[in-house]
Image (cartoon, rainbow, N blue to C red; front, side, top):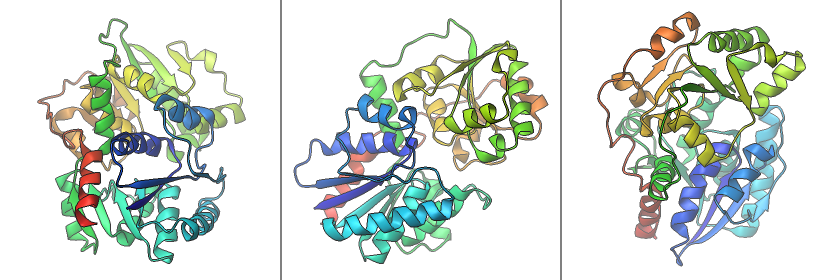
Length: 348
């Protein structure tokens, strides 16, 4: 079997690491990797290849930062050219980025079967580019690996044509690996909150971004704030003096396992990320998601995750609310990558 995978952004490198790790035990599957270069900052890309000891991508594009439509068109054209040479049996894509949709469309054009890992998720906010990307990719895909029963139900309700398969979330594989290898440091001796903000609706309006920073700075514990390149760019553009936020410690983006440890050892996570909401849950760290919606709605149960967008004045009170019962089985058993491999072998 010849499997081609398209990756391009930080969350995809993490998911890809889980699959590549599982594939290292296989000799029946030839694996070709295309890196689109959608995330090109070293702290958002190269650091993960070194940390996970991933093989060098077979092909690397230079998508860079462009208008989304131009970026998708560029990636699609380049991926089509590669697929014509490689002629894989399947093209696998993860999640909801522009790289995901570009890869799916390129494969569709060439009648190559598309596999979508993380299928069936919906935020029901069509203003999010990610929502459009994931819906369109699901429509194109032949095999849809879903992370939860809710995602399976959503695919059924939309009468998606492809074959939906429940495998759990592949990012849980990596958290389980971190546990197994003893890479998580125990203890919360230094009380602090951990924060990451990067989505356009929180960063592109400088007044909104400053409102978030001021709200975080007023909290009762120190805030460690990881500066995403997009967020840093906006702050530099407006010459914002970060030293005035006396209760905040700003850091550059860190590697995957360091990031897990920041989540694990914090009192709570404050984020607008998708994947980190799940990581916080698996690490039993409370999460406040600074968004109006989430595609990971199961994390909202029992108060482990809260949505907070307009009413940032309620942030402190929300942080003090204790979560309820915990579900060890949320999003699977941490063996999603092996389930992908087993399923593909069963149909070939």
